[in-house]
Length: 348
Image (cartoon, rainbow, N blue to C red; front, side):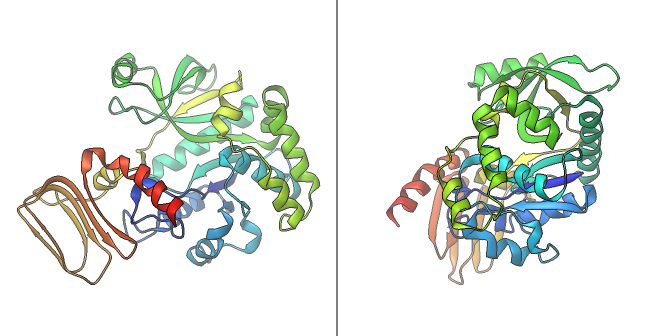
């Protein structure tokens, strides 16, 4: 199996921890390893053939954090163009270096997973099923609540010969709360976490049939032999930004989905980040030095500076102090930080 770690993105909803120059996948958010280091640690249990796709401006940081990898294991995305173009860039690279029949697993660098054994078991099963059935196999997450921030995969009938895997009946966009409750109650919907496995042959077949423009772009990347040339960078910059779900996956008519045998969290807000970390008896998580916290409840408090940070008498709050800025927000609407973060980036 070849594992491709997609390590782009800027994590705008975790500002001021996550910034353009140092986004969330490069940060220590859940333990003493960064998000990409944790992902790489899981990937090593799946395969020795690991490729990482960072955005060009972050390549130096990524290489420093993953010193075990050679330069040949990094595929630099010249500029951010969405996951669809990350995928075809990786496939073009694999075509040149590896061949076409080995299963390729695409995973993301900024997800939080505790059950590593379940992760390995699920991906190995997905690779086995994909190879046997010559299909793209998605990995879906069993919903634990009526979440409105994820897309959903509707399971169809069970695949004969591979118990626990299902045909994909449909994809559902991020629902409203009432619809999400219906999905949860129905029991045949999974969160779409953006994980999938398939060989180069399978991806090319699916692109030819369902995403011809994406396939043409792939062929163009293959013809450009030097991934570091100005011609390559210029062509990549001309590509239309697209998500792989919209460009290919949701158009494919012959997919399987395998429910994950592991826990999963997309650390997309400070509320998620708080849940991913241990809290004290009052529901508070504090990290950093020089923090003075009195009579707070359900608070995420973090100080990345040497200045004293004092928080008194607050509930359901996020307080983060860094050299890049200070955030004080109600935790339940902390995802709105992304809207402000984008404005800050535009003004810089």
